[in-house]
Image 1 (cartoon, rainbow, N blue to C red):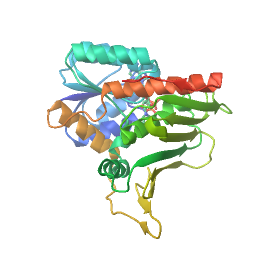
Image 2: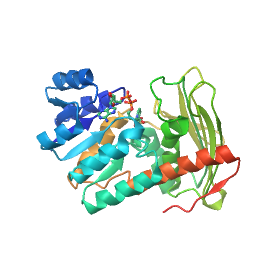
Image 3: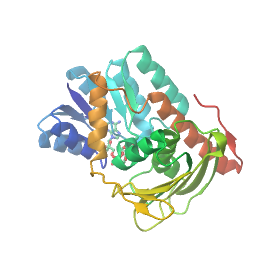
Image 4: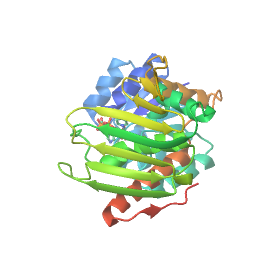
Length: 311
Ligand SMILES: NC(=O)c1ccc[n+]([C@@H]2O[C@H](COP(=O)([O-])OP(=O)(O)OC[C@H]3O[C@@H](n4cnc5c(N)ncnc54)[C@H](O)[C@@H]3O)[C@@H](O)[C@H]2O)c1
């Protein structure tokens, strides 16, 4: 298995580490010459500044696209047309119609296309997903997410809904195992060119709800979620991966081992290419997340709920 990586910036440097550790990294490409050289030399693989040069010179099975969101469509299109399996970082595309086209292109070329909704691989989310599936604490009724931090200065192409809230939109869809029927949001900006705070309400069947709070204002990093079930409330932290199950008279703290979600995510994609497991994040689900982000932005601009009919 040979895998190449496009984009070796703030987030991509972790992918190069993991891909090299798994022995599958074949080449890196970054339009920043210094970066591409640095990571090529660090992991003893070929390095390129241009994707076209990489595609024409390297033999490989799959690619990771870890470049800014606005570049995802063009880069992924070239890779899929070259018949490579593609992992695109989140959000898959800025425009959901472009996402639909990518999905169709991947289907036509018979290659896998997935997206980096990494929280599905967070052991804390995985445990809660299993509780919900088994109805261990009854029916899941409400979810609440907090994802807050100081503003990351290098993100210029999108606001907080496309950059940050999308993680929790995907996790909510995953835990409820359905798509929301209605979206209502409020958002605004204080420091950033695009929105830097947002509160999003997603309405699912039978009045089940997810409320997502995201901001680039809180001076410390907060990444928590809670799940209200009919027999208990589960609270968790995405960072510590700790879970607490609150029942009427006691609090249960299930044992769980800390694991690196990125390693699990990359192993799962490689497993899917090898036919050992299914893709966990299907491209249609990633397109839906972008549609929900678009609806959240529109809702906050118009001040009205947006009704959706998603596949
Ligand atoms: N899953 C997560 O938790 C998570 C976390 C952070 C970022 N991300 C996503 O990862 C992606 C990258 O984010 P980042 O923070 O690493 O950004 P970054 O700006 O730090 O790095 C992007 C890199 O891509 C390179 N680049 C830009 N255009 C290119 C092109 N056309 N061809 C080749 N290289 C190009 C840049 O030179 C830079 O080195 C974004 O889509 C972001 O949303 C995901």
